[in-house]
Amino acid sequence: MTRVTNFRWAIAWVGCGLLTGAALTYEMNVWRQFSGSFVQTDAVSAKLPLTTVKTPNHPLPSDPVLTFDYASDFAEGVALVRSGDRAYYIDSTGKPVIKLDESLDGTSPFSEDRALAKVNDYYGYIDRSGALVIPPQFMSAAPFSEGLAAVRPGNRYGYITKDGAIAIEVQFVAAGSFSQGLAAVKLGDRHGFIDRTGKPVIPLEFADAWSFSEERAAVRVERQWGYIDPTGRVVIAPQFDGAFTFSDQRGRVRKGSEWGFVAPDGQMAIAPQFAFASDFSEGLAAVMVGAQWGYVDLNGTLVIPPQFSFASEFSEGLAGVKLGDRYGFINPAGEMVIAPQFDNVGQFSEGLARVQVGSEWRYIKPNGEYLAP
Image (cartoon, rainbow, N blue to C red; front, side, top):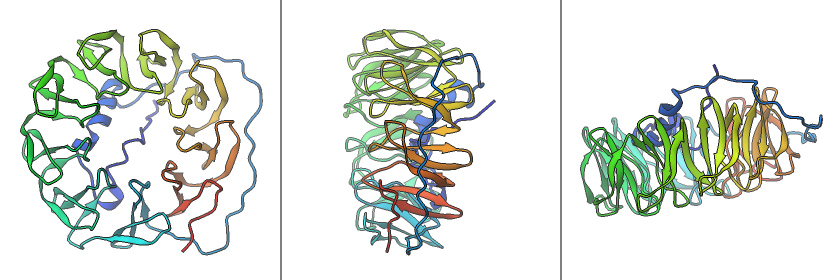
């Protein structure tokens, strides 16, 4: 059995001492749907041209580069980095722009001008000056989304505003982030959706539920997953063993151990056939055929043949892939534009991507150049 981690929820920056339960509610739902692992299968066969991507040789530069013990993806113009015991935020030039108080045990990337901050196992929020504007008081907390954040001061969740005021009373067993004006919540053993006032607008009658994306939300009725629209109407009947958020008008679904994609009207856009699949991004989705990863387009055509031991989603025209034991980046044509040379990589965000070389983290530009002092 092979475990596959979804890297989209990198908000829990363990490297900087931050781990928030609420921020990982989404990801825990993923594992709940397939027990944290899946069985690799060779059931998928495809006739593919015996070609591989180009692998130009981009030598590592000898010029000075910025290096860190830890680095996050860029968000809202800044990235969280750590050098030794000191954590701070840099801008896209590498200049330190937000200093952090030494009393903070960890912080997160920014979301809506607020970042999570941990002090003595409790979470609060800092603003873009680095000041604690919401005191550490929560056992768990999530990033802000649409002006509200889910927080857990005890054994129940509620929502706060960006100034720390209670917007929706603490009452929920689980609470997701707001998306398209609605948030998935759990009371007792049932899930439903509330609006920004806390009013249930879609009855709490589901065994599980995901956040809305592209006017669709995955919900579970007994053991099967389907989709509802923002009015609560079932638009895709429960029929899947797993269902996930829509992206590029495609919803990632699982039947048995095989993954495919459904269209918003419920028609199967790409029949379940893959050992695993990622969400669509920029018109392409990474899929696993046997033990290798390639990419399909919105019609299900394998446009980049399976050949990678790992493949991430496209972001800003590039995707991180692994060949052998090294990571590089490809473009949508499947051409290797930054040669495999890294021990780990993040996604391109705001023009830069974090990469790991040995024990050090650095940032690279789309042309493969390192961010220099």
